[in-house]
Image 1 (spheres, one colour):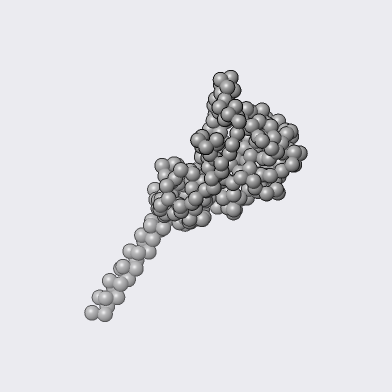
Image 2 (cartoon, rainbow, N blue to C red):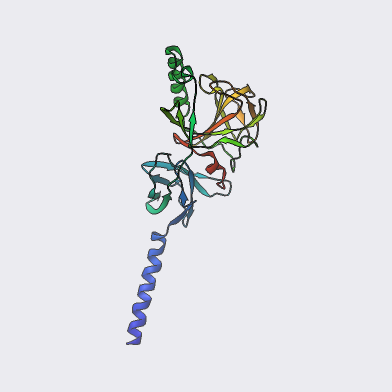
Length: 283
């Protein structure tokens, strides 16, 4: 009887060992596991077998590509739209013929509300201004739709060392009726304060825009862009390769600004995300 039991036990163990590589070809972790609408989180894949192809992740209907960092880690950056409803969402990773799923929690969050009173001519555009603004919106959308190879190097850093005057996600109520959501961060700064590139990239836009004034857009690759608005001066040209920390312009109040400051934004996979959440990630 004992011999028969031992035989069955060994058989179960062998079957487990045989199936182990198939069931655990890779594992992954989410950082952080809880976020708020507008945040970015990362996925790190740890492979237990050699697969030459890169994995693909899926979150909320979006497919996300991975990259290999200098330590050969497989990393993906995932944007959470500010309109995403709070709940648990599945995050699936496909690697070769295998698939694993974990869950990220989108927590409820109350963003600030700011009431602004402006002259009507600052709120309602003249036909010629509206036409210009629509043309520039199309230009910006085309610029931010490109997907290139990864250019950034390591962690992202703030564009200035000044304080924040208006955070990401602030709901603006203008003249008691018109509303908008602030999809960037406003940094304080006197005119002439240096503005630094948050990471390595290529200048894909250098324009004087109706709303943003003197604006620079850097392409960091893989659908990630940084946007710098209301500059008083440009310090780069379109097509320049920029290193992390390089001065790309100076703080100003060009465009539709009421005072000197830097409006800074990030777009990832076409989604406006909170820069502070990206700055916290170890990349």
